[in-house]
Image (cartoon, rainbow, N blue to C red):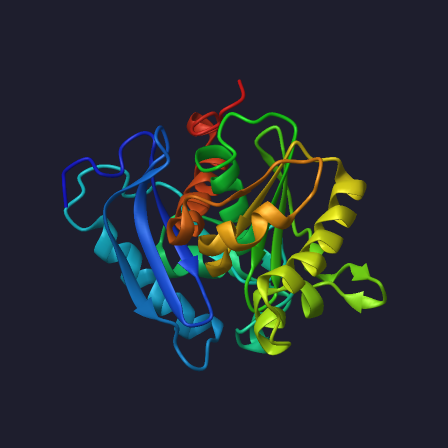
Length: 270
C-alpha cells in the first residue's frame, strides 16, 4: 500500500453487512477509495466479539505499510439503528448487539477512535455528497430497493439519522412489503405493474418531504430504464452511482466528522 495513505483527508471506512464486512481507505477530497477494498465474511454468530475481530483484521490490513494516521478515527457502518455509538437494533446480526456500545467496544479492539453510523445513513450521505446528489442543495432522499427498503434523508449535505421510510404505511401495508425489489419478484410483477406501486410509494414520500431529488439505489437501480420512464413525479428521480462503495465512503465521512481538525473534510456546502 502506498505511503501516507491515511494522511489528512484520508480515512479508513468499514462497512458491516449481513454476509460480508468490507473496508477501504477513502480520499474524502474526491470521495474515492484509494487502492483495493478488502473483504471478509461476516462471522457466525455475528456477535460483538466475532465481528470486532473481523473489523480489527481489516483495519490492520488497511493500515499496514501506511506511515501516517495510525491513530486516526475509523468509520464503521452497522446494519441497525445507531444512537451515539450505541446499537439499538440488530438486523441480520446477533441480538447481543441490541443496546450495545459498539463504538467503545470496537475502539478497544482496534485501539483507535471509532465513529459508528447506520449503514443506510452512511450510504445515503456518500451518494448525496459524491454520487448522484453531488452539488444538490436542500432535501435529498436516498432510497435503496432490495430485500426491504433502506432510506436516508439528507439536508444540505447532513443526514437526519435512522429514518426508516421503508416502514411507513401505504394503503394499509408496510411500504417495503409492496414496493421493494423482493416484493416485485415475489408477486411476479412486470415493470409496468411494479412502477404503479413504486409511483404510489414515492408520491407519498414526495408529499411528506418535498425533496429536491430522489436517488434510487440497490441492485434494481441498474434497471432504471425499465421503470423510471413510467414514473410521473414532480421531483427528479435518478439512479445511484457509488453502488457497493457507498457504505465505505459514508463510514469515512462519519470518521472525518468526529475528528476536530477534519470537520469540513468532504463537506460540499461551506
